[in-house]
Length: 235
Image 1 (cartoon, rainbow, N blue to C red):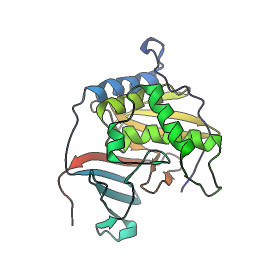
Image 2: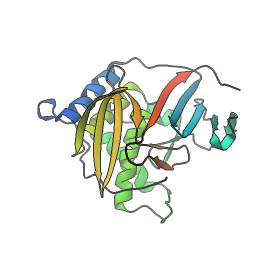
Image 3: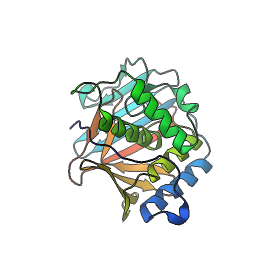
């Protein structure tokens, strides 16, 4: 199901560790790990999302060429013609733009918000309203830590910005890492599982597709995520 939901009301700045709630502490620890993790390299940025009834894979080169495999391709690897390969919530971004994003949390969130506001993104209801734009900003921050080949310092800034959202709760240790529940307003929420050793999002209740759709799981359902560099493009 493709959905959009309400606003967040966050400043997007850093949360002092001394004042952080348990869920925020998990995100701040992930930010520290992300910043210290050496940048990786490879020929293709590989992203896999899967659940009990869904599997989608993509391989993207730095020049933007993208190949996909999933239910819609009948299990065959096919090149996907995209003018710009990555989605930062709503707007398109290139690999080079990802490398130049702000590394300070508030500035990063403002950059995404400005890009959303100035973009020509449309929803089924038309031009996004203020609440939908806030949703897209959160989705952009999430994409940086979960789906996109962002540099370590950019990922760290995105974790800090997410930690600054007002309703971030720990749901405890679970398979794959530490569970989080982030309430986003208007009854919307995001559920994540973070691996604290790698600062990678292992599971999520939603993700953003290459064409900008927001795919969400109902109830307790979640997608497993794999995001990494590889030198191999399957045929």
